[in-house]
Image (cartoon, rainbow, N blue to C red; front, side, top):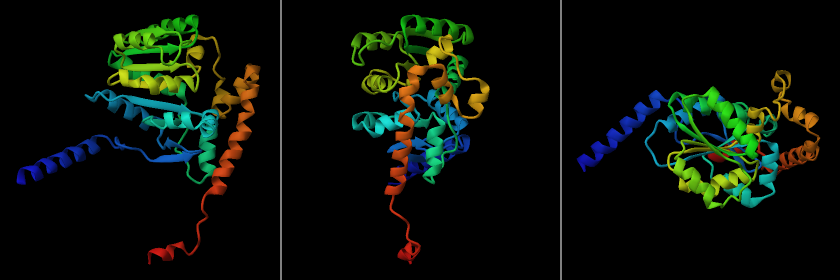
Length: 282
C-alpha cells in the first residue's frame, strides 16, 4: 500500500513539474460551443506551444487538428455524419472571423482567430527546426508539385513527399505510400469535407503524426491563388477578397446568412437564466 501511495505521489509530483514547465493545459483546453462544434479557446501562440509539446513526446498517438470557418460550421450543423467525424479531432480551431464574432454574440468569447495557413506555417517552422518529415496531400498534380518545390527551398531541413488529392478517401494505395514515407506531419489540402474525412478514416495507419486539413493553402503557397492584401487581413475581410477575386465563391457566400441565422437560433434556444437561480444553492 505504501509503495502504491509513493508511486501515486511521484506521479503527481511529475505532473506538477510538467505544469510548471508548460503554463498551458496539455490535457484538455476550454472549449466554446458554436453550432455544436467545440472550438478550442486558445491563442495562436498557445496552440503552437501545444503542437511543439506533442512533437517532443514519445507516443504512438496522433494529433488531429481541424481549422473550421463559418462555412464548415454550417455544413457540420446540417450534416450529422461530418459533425461526428470532426468531433474526433483533438483540436477544432476558429479559422474565420465569423466564428469569433459568433462566439462573442453567444456571450462565450474566443480568445482569437487562428488562420489555418498561418498555423501551417508555424508547424513547418517546428518541422524545420527538428528535421522532420512532411507529407503534402491534395491540390492538382501541378499545384502540389509547385507547393513542394517552394517549401523545400524555404524549409531546407524538412524531408517532403507529396501526392495530388483527386483520390477516394479510402484509397489504400495512397495511404500505403504515405505510411511508407513515415511522416511527422500530414497536410491535407482537398477542401472540406473530404480532407477531414480522409484524416478521420486513415489516421489509425500512422503513429505520432500531426494531421491537419489546410483547404486551399497549397494554391496560395504555389501562387495559383493570391492571398488577400494585408489591409483585408487586418480588417478580417479575407473572405470578401476571395469572393471579389473568384466569382465561383459567390454561391458559397450565401451560406454566411444561413450561418448567422443558425447562430441566432442557438442563442435563442438556450435556457434563460432566472435572477433567482442563485437561491437554489442556498
